[in-house]
Image (cartoon, rainbow, N blue to C red; front, side, top):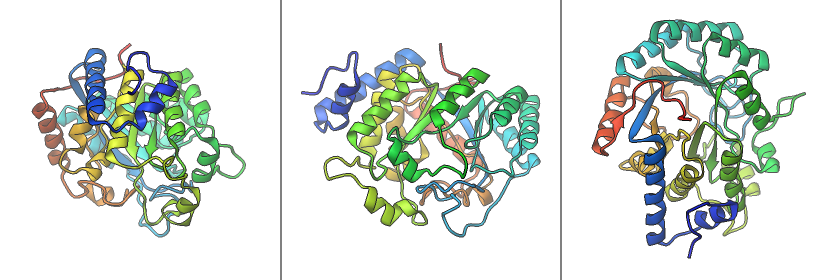
Length: 352
């Protein structure tokens, strides 16, 4: 029998991650949904995603837009293009805009500060930034300009594995937990997340990841499956080298992703958790709905113009690359209402 879901500790999380009895898992799904309803309610918040640049100086072994990922047409959206996406999000009723991109020095401190100020002035939306490991000076300037949240995924708590898949830049050491804590001190809500099924990720590591969410009191948590990009080292020889022993390697499947989401909701009851687009790749008919029924309370419809969206290929098979922003927004609202939930209003920050 799996351990009781009341007062889960790290070892209990580890046991539930490998649970495969359908009756036990039904109990897990019900508990995660009850916790979600009690702590964040029935609202599903819509956050408009804008992929502002696919340039990146990092050589992360898993990412399809990394500097090591081979030839790829690169783009960097202009101030006016980003602002037009923000206006669309306002018109759709989105309370938050998420500006995401590779770690791109071409997106300068002054440029992004100007963008943030303009979005705030025109829309009043909350702004989440996800632009990689930027300097403290950049982060402070963007916070002062009006940015509300920053998302920086740590991907895995296994430091040796992290260093293999996420090499530091020359002369620096990547310390994402340290950066997250500094951003909190600057006044940001902080967000992070992990991939499920990275080669070399074990069940013990994944349990540690979930326990780290709790320990660092994270405001936003993104959980999605590892989807190998054929352009990356992790999809080839490096992935074979790093893979854990049979029985210990975490699967990059829908079930494991949903178990991780549900357990995260139980141990981090008031955190905002999105049902990610990657789930729709694993299960086009029900992946995102399953996420919302197992603890998630956020959807991020893509506002990026299609000509850029198709080039922001962090993994293959990206969903809805050619659909209009209106169609994606309408689809998200339809899903929410079909599940008997309500569309959230306002910025949708973490409840305290």
